[in-house]
Amino acid sequence: MNEKESPERDRISFGVIASAAVVILIIVVGVVVYIGRDNSPSATKPDGTAPAVSDAGATGFAAPEVDLFGRRVDIPNNVAGQPLPQDVRKQHKPSDQDWLTAAPAGTVDPDGWQRVYGASVPFSTSDGPSRLEDGLAVGYSHTPQGAVLAAAQITYRLNARPADRELYVRQVRVSAQQVTAYDQALADQRLPKQQPEKVTRYLVASDAFQIENYADDMAIVRLAARGPVVDNRQLWAAVRLIMVWDAGDWRLKPSTSKTSQTEYVDSLAGWTRW
Image (cartoon, rainbow, N blue to C red; front, side, top):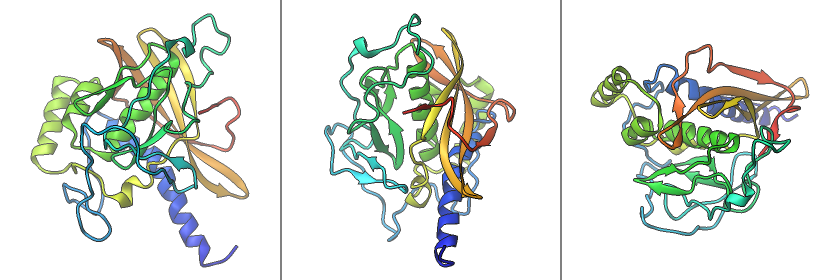
């Protein structure tokens, strides 16, 4: 390996691991705590200018791009994303043998992974999100697949836009005390409205997921994001997230450090590839 290439690879690997681990910083007690060197509340591009924001009412897609690993990621004309047409016949049923292990339909097709506020998030043609409401992706199926889609969408969007109060209040199951603490963090300008590209570029698509436990009112899911190669072994950072079914949709439940722990695995055997 070229010595000049090693630091760059290590930097990328660290960033990818952080893309999974940083989820814990955001949801551990239901209060976003922005930790970083750049304390600016708004994002800038590398040239110092503000990033372009697409029309909230726009539809369709611009030319696709690739992420850090050379994988396709589609660019919606609406910065909040472009929900795909849904076919409920593709949804799995509890009687299906792969009820807990099947992937949602459409995520491996074009438009299945979209760059939303800089982060790569999954859109299915079977289990949601089915629509946007005030810039939020909502309308997930009441299935294990709907739960894991919501987990990926909500956590990555919140990582990209920590000061998105509407997202925090509506799609995270928080108490009045947690909302008060969050509002104080907003007032203190400790939460950026939009993370800069140097941060969001590491919020890449997870490679696989697991449904550890599922019931009609709660799902415990894990997302595995690609990390470094150590001793010729590929590692993934696996973070555990808790989703609750509330008012007709999946919402993220703030986790303790124990339940949201990040572990490192060297195999995706037993995981479901998107």
